[in-house]
Image (cartoon, rainbow, N blue to C red):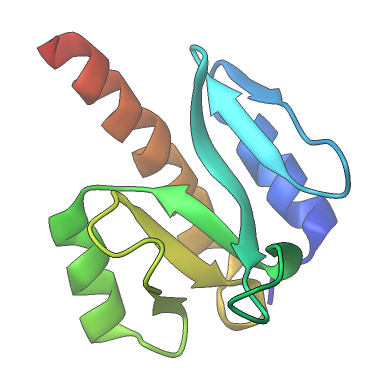
Length: 118
């Protein structure tokens, strides 16, 4: 299980990371690109999304996302809003610090690779 303080500590340990959290939501970026943020849950189709601090969205390749969800659906998932988007949803109560740290580093590297390809 990972709490908010641990998420913040792990995210800020990534080289070049900055904390852009505000309004009760976590948000981290490196080189101006977001790599992890609080999941915004839609509780009703006609209502606005609300922050769900129990879930973190982390950037990753779609292939990696699909692999993570297939291998550990208790820790990783997707929803209609994120389907086809290069980020996996992580249940913080079900993941360990070491695994999350690796995912956060992968998120920064994924963004860096996208920038280099341009």
